Image 1: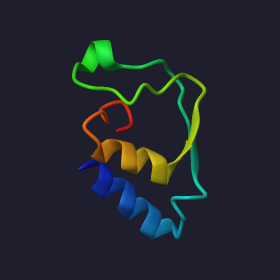
Image 2 (image 1 turned 90 degrees about the vertical axis):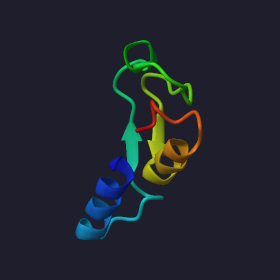
Image 3 (image 1 turned 180 degrees about the vertical axis):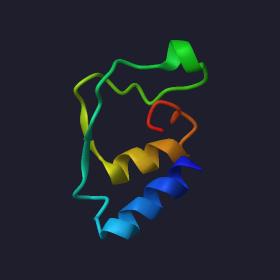
Image 4 (image 1 turned 135 degrees about the vertical axis):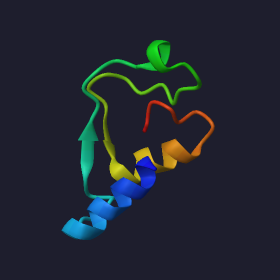
Length: 64
């Protein structure tokens, strides 16, 4: 569902997912959510494309 919402917003605003960067604001939420992790760190700055790809991997809970 997260991927769908992000793709809808990118389309609605005419944004290129390779050019939109997201800064990670908090440390990993893995202890709270459980599951696997892509090991994102606070202050990392990643493209939306990279985060979408990370959500599709088995280790993508924190990318979502």
